Amino acid sequence: MNNLLSLFSNNILPIFLAAGCGYLISRFLKVPPKPISQVTFYIFSPCLIFSLLTKSQLGGDDVTRMVAFTVILMTGLGLFAWLVGRTLKFDRLLLVAVILTTMFANSGNYGLSLTWFAFGEDALAHASLFFVTQAILVQTVGVVIVSLGSLSLKQAIISLFKVPGLYAVTLALFFNYMNWQLPLFADRTISLLGDAAIPVLMVLMGIQLGYSSINGSPRALVTTNVLRLVISPALAIGLSVAFGLTGAARQAGIIEAAMPTAVLTTVLATQYNVKPSFVSTVVFTTTLLSPFTVTPLLAYLVA
Image (cartoon, rainbow, N blue to C red; front, top):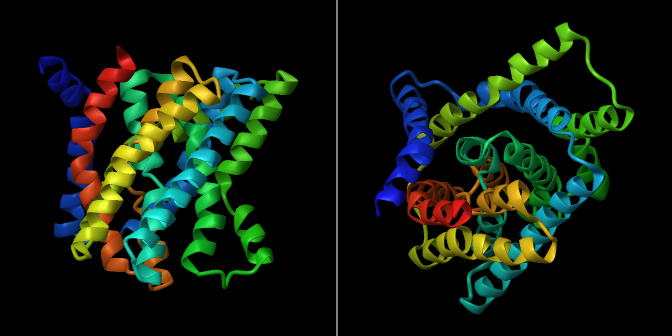
């Protein structure tokens, strides 16, 4: 028990305290999340990803395994959510909302921060690949899901090339392959901007939660919380064996899979009118419940 309390207080509590600061300023100062999210998405996160990948010197096999692991994990979760939703006879929009909130985890705001605290920079480099892969899937597969097939293939492809993390990964892998190094002034600039990503992501999570509402179908809510917080990490543990993930890569992949529902799902649900209140409730409840599932998982991964 003392070990669990120590893991919670040292790794998860700081994230919730930082997010709490964001929640308070969203409530009392009415700070909107969108401008901060855009700055983080287009500047801080790509710099963090580039810096991590160039300094960690991950090989092509490492990248391929983590990307494949992430894609298969999310595909499996989506199919599982669809089967459960159909079995429980959810209506079409509720079923789409359940699939959306099950597939996509808070791998950025919460996942990168926790991975850094618990496992260090080697694991953080792997987690950044999970984060970028999911960001691409959200912009393509996620949009197709919430639009119920109304999005054209051309629009999906265009949205893919709007994900800045994709360019950061590509550029970092090219630098590693060529064994290039940035000039000192450029390296320091990117490092400074990248270092800002994690604290800003933690505060941003709190700001976004401050704008969440509580409403939803109890049965669907329980279903999605179980799928997101229990089934997802269990599936990740099995897939980590199948993909040969070990050490820092295994820790990063499993802990990212255990994260609560991504806050970005509320944006998609609102934009396409797919049960936005339910989606907001799932984000809120999975985030609040996550310490109860993530803390013992941390104990398992550090054992």
